Image (cartoon, rainbow, N blue to C red; front, side, top):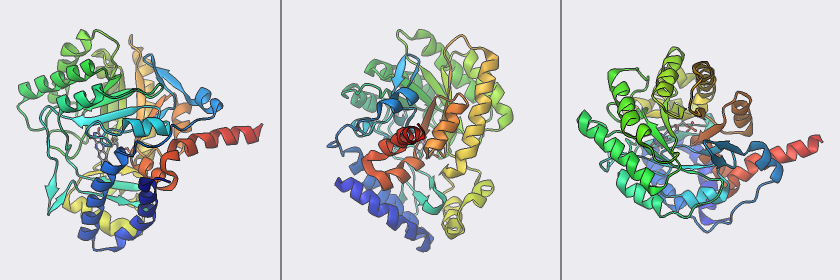
Length: 384
Ligand SMILES: Cc1cc2nc3c(=O)[nH]c(=O)nc-3n(C[C@H](O)[C@H](O)[C@H](O)COP(=O)(O)O)c2cc1C
């Protein structure tokens, strides 16, 4: 067991006592611990590459846009803001990797009441809140880091970008497409456009299909999608709070503009509606965080919505009959093989996880993907 696995295991047990602390102290402790842990975790490069059962790889491996994802599960954006951690998750067996989200100008992220990058977990509820505010080193710096990475077969490398919140629109759009070009030049395999961070001004938790969104999507279509000199899929990430009635229009817009997929989705700001899914031992901390910082909710509270939205998006995409290869990617509350299987049964080829990943890492360490997927092999063998 590596020291980071030991730390994660201890944390997995100890974090259950955080909700019993005074809430402000609990947030302070968790936020600091999370930052320190994230840095060490991404640098734990000494691990051996995990070996998967051949049946698992042939059953679950998938090829999308000519890219081979050896498993249909990978990290969600925000886990590796500065392009760190690829080797760690690739050796664990992740089906892919995404860096960022980055912006044109480096961002310090949010600090309030002396808490830098406020975040907290609700372990009994398998959920979390964060109000980090997109801290990052900027597109150009992270593109340089990604360009230098040794790559692992079966683990495509993606990057996530956003227009700079609060920047004048013409500059923000130019910064966004310049960043996308920098990543294209760095050799990334695919790009995500993050349209859904609730922790910065200008992003939507809705999303409303407003003029700003359409202008951004059109600008990217004109200056990136239609000028690609190699196959570089670009997908758009919306919120898990997206109203079901908006999905058909959103899917139709992104398909018509030439995008290659949609991710549903990002964190939620529906604090009141999702409160009933929080264990009663954790509601005091939940109320404190959501009332003090707001932030985005993640984890199990999003599970059913992410699936329902993806199913709807898949149906909408089929109706549009796109000329391009178009995929729906599920993100939100994915934590078990049953979740991956539910996605698969509905034609959703790829899943991303964040909150569930760290929950599982606390239990299984670097065997996190192995334990999840090889259980499928064991089950299928025992059924024979
Ligand atoms: C601490 C934290 C930071 C995040 N940062 C980003 C980000 O930079 N870009 C992004 O698109 N999503 C970000 N997200 C959202 C996740 O990518 C994901 O959409 C969300 O957590 C739902 O997935 P989950 O339920 O598996 O956690 C962040 C989430 C967390 C918890």
